[in-house]
Structures are given as C-alpha cells and as structure tokens.
Length: 177
Ligand code: S3P
Image 1 (cartoon, helix red, strand yellow):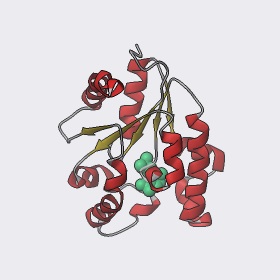
Image 2 (image 1 turned 135 degrees about the horizontal axis):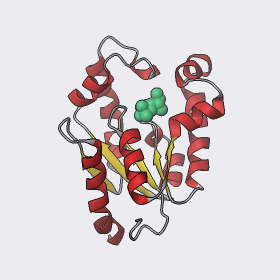
Image 3 (image 1 turned 135 degrees about the vertical axis):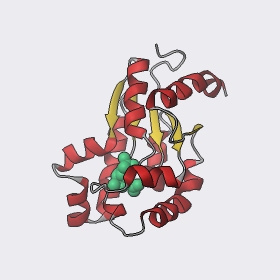
Image 4 (image 1 turned 180 degrees about the vertical axis):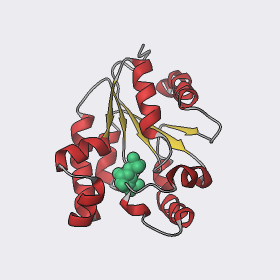
C-alpha cells in the first residue's frame, strides 16, 4: 500500500535515538517497501563497526563514506532509509535525500538521553555529559533537520507503530504540496 508515493523513497532524518531505525522498519512493512539502515550498510561496506572506523579513520573519512552510501541508497526505489543523525551535515547529501521524501523524527533531548544512556556504539557520545552533548549537536543541526518535507514530533509515550502511523497519515498532505 504505497498510496500516492509511486515508489518514492522515504528518508528518515533526526538525532541519534530518535527512533529512525525502529520506525523505519515498521513504516517499510506498512508500505510494502524495503528497509535500509544507512549505518548498517556503511558498516558492511567498511567491514568494521562505526566506532572502530571513527577511531581509525576519523570523522571526516566517516562522513565521506556516509555520503557514498547515501548516494547508493538514493538510487533505489520503494525503500525506506534510516539515515545516520549527521547525514544532514553535508550539502551534497541533500541532493541524495531530495530523491525522496524527507521525514524528520524530532524528540525532546531528555527522551534521547534516556534511550541512549549506556549506549557504546556511538562514537560522538563518549562523554560524561550526555544531555549536554546531545543539546550541542541538536543546536548545530536543528536548522538542517527543519529542511525536511515533514516533521513528526515524537514523545516517550508514542509507540513505534504510532509514529509510523502518523507518518502514513501525513503522506497525502505532503505529497500534494
Ligand atoms: C551519528 C549518528 C549515528 C552514526 C554515527 C554518527 C551522528 O547514527 O551515523 O555514530 O553524527 O549523529 P544514528 O543516528 O542512527 O544513531
């Protein structure tokens, strides 16, 4: 049931912990689309974990590879793509994201921090002050996330299914505009 999407990809953007991967999987199922997690594709290409890649090659090399992966995913159709939280940083990536519909999952920093506490897979969050770091990153990125075609405000109370349902419900309006 892809409605009026006509095979158009959906890219989920937003901060780490905003639910892009879990919501993306449900959304893809509901649409009869494939699901790609850009971080997992990147780890397959790099043949190592994001943590390890960051430590060995640095953030700039990570961003280069992230762009390459996004470029390849943008060439697909009928796909939901969960992007990494920093995918919005490079202008070049927007030319890939604009191949599809861009949906921003926003969430309060306190909710992100609650979900990410104890996480050891994200190199940018190796810090004592998790909330402070998330606030700083959000401050740097918010204006970019706002360039999405659709913004969905999530809360701790909303289930993955409910967030996916909100996206589905908003699609006809966004596709018309
Ligand atoms: C990053 C987010 C991560 C991953 C990497 C960098 C970021 O993806 O790409 O650790 O810069 O926000 P998720 O948003 O899927 O956690």
